[in-house]
Image (cartoon, rainbow, N blue to C red):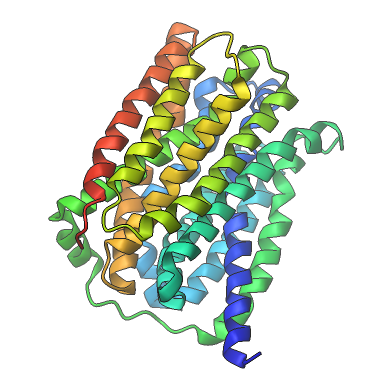
Amino acid sequence: MSPEQSRRILLFIAIVAISLNLRPAIGAVGPLIHEIRMDTGLSNALLGMLTTLPVLAFGLFSILTPIFTRKIGTEGTMSLALILLAIGIFLRVIPSISALFLGTIILGIGITLGNVLLPGIVKKKFPEKFGMMTGIYSAMLGLGAAIASGISVPLSEDLALGWRWSLGVWGFFALFAFILWLPQMKDNIHVKARNSIIGSLKHLGRSNLAWNIALFMGMQSLTFYTLVAWLPEILIDRGMSSVHAGWMLSLLMITGAAGTLIIPSWASRRERQRLPVILILSGEIIGIIALMNPSLPFATFWIILLGVSSGSSFGMALLFIGLRARDTDAANELSGMSQSFGYTLAATGPVLFGMFYDMVSNWTLPLCFLLFVAFVKLWSGIRAGQNEFV
């Protein structure tokens, strides 16, 4: 094996490890909502903020990522991302409401930097396999969240760690990913971007295609993080135990990981991506309508359908960033712009969903809200699927 092949394998392993670590800190919260509420007395709106704050950080800091890459390089910024992620996770172990929310904000910033950097790193290091690599790392994002959501209640109750350490154990895995990433630091150089941040925003702001990609990113993220925060509560209200509901959320994410693994590779080989978008959103719309049934027959089937659809939407959003950009610099700029706008929009989802439930004390109105989001996503995805560059 040549030194170059060894370096690519190490980079691949590091990318997989990072991807696995960028969602557990969020995915572990949903199944523990009941425990956190009982221990802290927080309202549904404030509990929704535990999912919303990281997403809001995605929106506010995505556009600022180029500042970090110009100061400390792409590899250095990824190292900073993993350190912030670990610090934020460990802060949430402290028995304090302030530490809980502060840690959530800090880990959100760390995840943000990793989110923005991954598409550009993959486009630069694996240009000939961009679709496949996008599918792999986006699938790992979903798998990390699935594992966290599935074992968070058992960690808290069966192992008697309590909800704080059930959230806190993921800090050790973030540190492990940081260690795996360290060899990449020898190639770290400060990025010299062609355009200023303001210049990039002005350029992208004039592109309807860029705005449709950003809207698609926002709508798919809004749906995903709303389901992460509230799906267990919906299922518990339908008669499931908290452990069963947690595993259903895990199933949603595992099947989502399968969707993100398969769909980008297939869609990237097509001249246009409109057909994949239509198929994905049709499944999501049917799944949301099924959740409105109070008895929820065939629950496992509908969760799988929703999982594949939501995961595939995420893979398509990342794929659009790479396909609609001519090079790595353009991909980083489009990634920052679309994730900044998209995640800021998505941050409203869990809170609005909780507020709608508080207003009517049933899940019909909140789910109608997600149904509207799905149709907006369909509209923007069809337009983002045209064969053009921003």
